[in-house]
Amino acid sequence: MKYICLGYYDKGKFDAMTEAERNAMFDTCFDYDDHLRANGHWGGGEALQGPETALTLSWKNGKVATTDGPYAETKEQLGGIIVLEARDMNHAVQLIGQHPALTYGNIFEIRPAGDMNEVIKASEQRRRQGVAP
Amino acid sequence: MSPPVPEQLSRTIETLYRSESGRVLATLVRLLGDLDLAEESMHEAFAAALESWPRTGIPDKPRPWLISTARFKAIDAMRRRARSDGAQRDLVAHMESRVKDAPSGNEEIGDEEIDDDRLRLIFTCCHPALSPEGQVALTLREICGLTTEEIARAFLVTPATLAQRIVRAKTRIREASIPYEVPAPQELPERLDAVLQVIYLVFNEGYSAAAGAEVTRAELTGEAIRLGRLLTKLQPEPEVIGLLALMLLQESRRAARTSPTGELILLENQDRSLWNREQIAEGVALVEKALSSRRFGPYTLQAAIAAVHAEAESAAATDWRQIVGLYNQLVRIQPSPVVHLNRAVAIAERDGPEAGLTHIDALLGHGELANYYLAHSARAELYRRLGRTAEARSSYEKALALTQQEPERQFLQQRIRQLK
Image: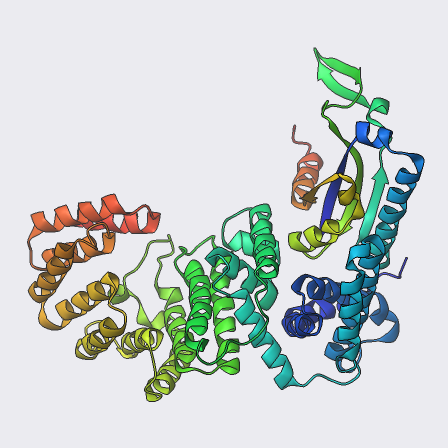
């Protein structure tokens, strides 16, 4: 079963770290990521560039509106995601509970991947029959 | 990337997980002395199987392979932790020597030893220092091998809520240093009672659910019976056997106890041809075994009562004299108001509604059952049989006001309508 782990970080704290501190954090985190890979738990993952690089889209007055910056202006910002392969929620908690990123004050939110197979199948059927959405 | 695992092999490994994970985990907990580490390394071992078995084929003896692989994975995990946390270094050295000194992975661990391991783990999961809901969740996950999501579905809570219960229970085990052992003989009756309570709680959670859509809840009765069988094998005390008998005899009526529309059907109105004869035969044999020990308790007596019902060809043919006799014994060792009420109902069947009413009214006079809907509905039923409609109606209405469960409410409302 897939679990999506959203990693949040405090940009202020991160910017205040020295290069050596940052490198130490990266090394231990990547080491643990390698462990997850080696044991078949790593379903994928990406780091995100800083929140200042974000562009947020929405629909306003009948057209697309764009704003600079992240959708939610919070102190902790989404910094990366991991797609985790685990047997169940508690297995995911156990694996992410050992992630060294936590010890640096980062936060993980774990969510089971949604199963859209049934919804997609139903949708395909509707579209084949040409029924309006 | 490793090559894709053939579907058949992947299914075989999943089946193996269902049948072996409980045994493998229990042994690993003993070897490693830590539930979390044992669980994690077991998962790694199964993941390693998925990775290497497509190339090497399935080993002749998968269980020792899994245990031995998990031990190496545990050493890896401990070394990794020591790298990131210097403070753990001593602990790791200690754990490593413990893992290495244990009998080598190539020697097969005997079935008997594994049975002992499983029994230890059951007592740990059902330890009285854990909350009842924590005991249930932990037992289903660690002993039965159900996933967090499966347990959450069965108990109608979100997986996140259930995941937290398990995390809390595990933390409690660590913090309270709950030992991983079978209790000493002087503690055994009490601790065994806690285990039986967990199993019966799992069973009732599945059994009290209405039929129909709640299929996953029905599976809980299956898991409880599986646990009962396991415990009967590991610790064949009379009450363990009695509980297994009780569950089998109650489960034997499953098909007959609800109508296709989900309404409850009382024992007396059930179509007895729908009762599961195999479960009845097994249950009755177990009751006789437990009774012959002369050391039985409340589960065995309840099972014996269920057995008398199971053996009656029709409701009218029920041997109420024997049932009252069994309730007389039960009331002595478990003098709860509910047992008293059931005894009063049995007396009504044996001696007539008036005798039953006298008993129920005396119980209601004590006050304890005043808010128990079944006391009022039993009273209503006896008044109905006596043709005292007004008193019957008022008692049914009292019962209705006291229950929130939909099938019960439907049943009571129907009874009130039938009075008019």
